[in-house]
Amino acid sequence: MKKLPVLAALIACFAVMRAAEPATPALGKAADNKIYAQKLVNELMAKNPDLLVVGFHAISPGTTEQKMIASNLDRIGKDDDDDDKAVVTERKTICVPNAKESNKFEVQVPMKDATGAIIGAYGFVFLYKAGDDEVELHRKGVVLRDALSKKIPNLAALFAPAKL
Image 1 (cartoon, rainbow, N blue to C red):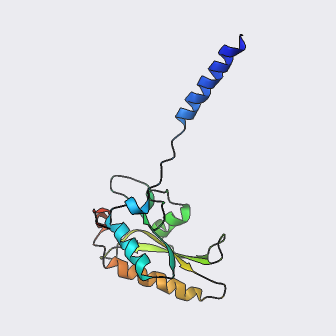
Image 2 (cartoon, helix red, strand yellow; image 1 turned 30 degrees about the vertical axis):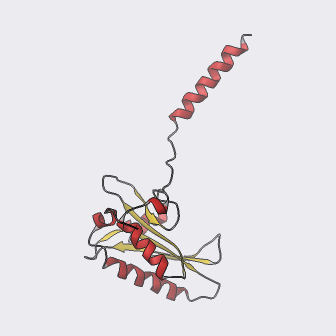
Image 3 (tube, rainbow, N blue to C red; image 1 turned 90 degrees about the vertical axis):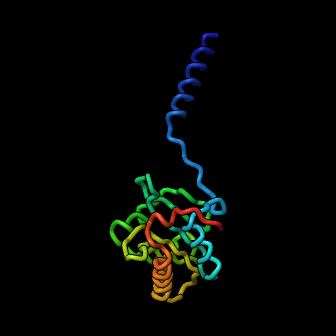
């Protein structure tokens, strides 16, 4: 009978430990993301059949961490990986076949606003097969980025409410 209080104490201890762990925030759904950035993503996906994935990465007003702010995937709010952050902080462009899915080629480029200021990062994933012209896929990513910049007056505009 003395084992019961010990067991209860252990269970209570684990409950406290579990409560102390930071909760993993639920990621938002693209369909529920009613901001201008999401509208731009939806337009890109509709006009570019060779695009499989689009991700906009930026620091939301009032926050300090760069995250996925818009995408065609249900990953809104996902913390950015080091490579996503490096595209902004180090002005890197990343062009690479997807290591896990050979039919995808990733192009990550700095996101610019209409003034040319870097305000985030774009991730474009194109349909790909071995032997495709990777330089051409990079060019397509830059063309998309440059066209988007003309539609973005500043970072705050990306977070403006929008009808989708």
